[in-house]
Image (tube, rainbow, N blue to C red; front, side, top):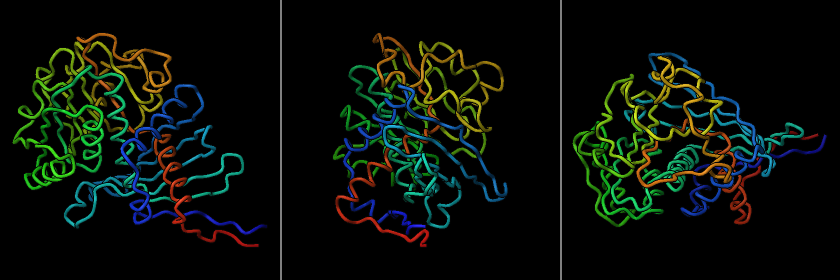
Length: 335
């Protein structure tokens, strides 16, 4: 057997790559187009809860992107209390494989990839489904993905007003300060959900609730707004989806996977089914279905996380890192 090496990228190497906002958005858009064209395989995510006492779980995402020539598996730990130990709540590894032989190709730190690809999916959803010229963004949640939600949305729309909120004052204050510094504009930190979300053009809910709770009032959503709720535990009352003109999902194959997610109570209650959704986001990315068709359409986009986005962004980072000569090669097998 020939010598086989695996390419490895840790956080230091990924930081050196220095992906731009447009790098991230383009990589994720190409993955979505491939999904819309039927050139991907996405297996529904799986959950592993080692012990309920640890207040966390693992997500296992699996997929294949034909144009990139990679199959991939990402394992991400989502542990709510990690901040007490000075750790991010989400830590992950992405494993890339040759889809023809199963040979492992690369191992990549995916905590940052998870955050970036999630923010890109939110932003691209707004690009195709949001109001034409949104002025106000309301964002609840300060988890790792939240930063990239706001950063990439503002990159596309340059908001006049950005409001953020999170349950813990120290968390929301630090979040607002970081965003204000990096975006070069004022960010309003609110003390409650309503003052953050009510009347905004784009409303994002990315909270870390310990259990489902109806925190997001439907009356705060104005006609023509764009709403993205993707908290692990649902913050939506059962009547929340009433009156939306379009419901869009990232991948309908994952709709019923697991027991978590923003619309899980609505699915369990029989209020939402596959037929409730207008489209998958890949169909819109590939031009198979139109996105927003009228200024007064009120649209909800639910994304649970696409393994193909992890693969697409991981492949882009790996390509740039190779060009910079900073990939580490680890010996896997040697004849």
